[in-house]
Length: 397
Image 1 (cartoon, rainbow, N blue to C red):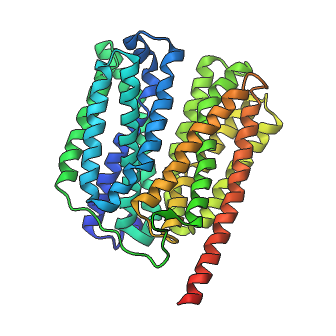
Image 2 (tube, rainbow, N blue to C red):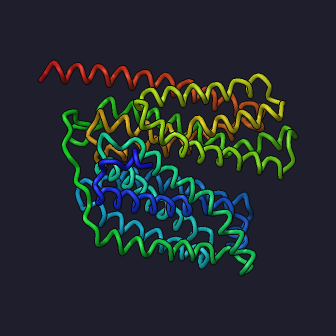
């Protein structure tokens, strides 16, 4: 740990710790729907099928935040925007248990997703502005903090139900946890963006490199979210596992994913982001191939799920670290990246849902594998475009 922080100013470390705390909260808030879905359905008097629209509403809000909220960091003090988003998240979480109609809850989730997305974009952007070329291990740590929050959320919900007979107190606790961060960010100076030689956009339009990276994020998010959301149904529909076993399998995938982000912090210090990305894609491919060849083998399914979670854990922070070295990371640029993430997280899991029962559950593994293969193609195009851009800039100097 000393090697990571050696030579880093104290103020930068303090800001990094604050961003990490905000990402723990973001992980808690972002994971809150799943474990509380039955409670929300009962609270609004609708079925589980009807209440599942909340996932769509939050994803749509995430896309809205990436489109609009990301630009706020280019125009205003980042920490002021951060504080406002935390207020919105706190109010939204606090109102969820009090909302008893589905329509109002959908609207609330839409805005909550937008607040979360803007906070997500901001933490990634501001961390880059703080550390610049030294950002890779800190970026991995930031996304590990998100995983910590996602891991703790089911425990908090279970404790709330055990102690109070309801999940309401879990939401209210999360709402309260945001308030100290609001006060801290409102009173802390924001890091400033420094100009890069390679500009990311001209007149608000994304450069080809930024669009390629956004496309890569589209496919990567499809792999991560699709597998995590559908592996439970895959295992139970094919009667490979009981409901409990499939739940453990899903938890194992996300647990391996979170562990992977911790384990790759030292790798991010030693490897170039491009090499780390290829290592991640290669590990994911090695994990998926046995599952494609032996789809009914439970040990293979367990090993493949854990391997996939570990392998793809560092993809997002590694690509952000790569982008930092090639483009001027502004709020709107990070917004383009999150548009790719949001669209991939919405569309590819939806596509799997259209063919899962109509064709065969095996189609989930096929679509995830195709998405991974296409992401490797996009990664090669990103690296090629980046090299051409660097050569062009050198020739112009």
